[in-house]
Length: 132
Image (tube, rainbow, N blue to C red; front, side, top):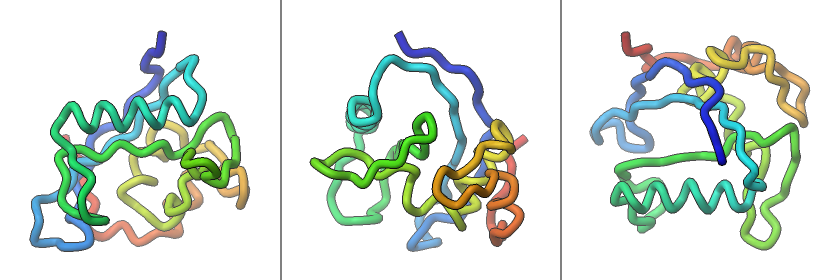
């Protein structure tokens, strides 16, 4: 059985790639699960589908977008349709790094060795707002 260990505050960010779309609400969770990374990603996709997400065009507006950012320090290349870990666009994305640094500031990227807090400090945070 999976369970929630930590959850960040909610953050609002401008929609991307089209900022005229409704803003995004972002958060980071740490969970404990017996699922491996591929099964966990499949479960996340099933949750998205349950909330009405349809995978049409790349970066199309969506009702829910759940990403697997990291998994026990593993590095995976996405072979056989599995996840790429850590998430290849993690660094430089303040909307991911702000909530991640809140719950795990000392988490280290397994490829570049930087902490979540260090990556966030080096990232443009314009347009990211913590929701009180």
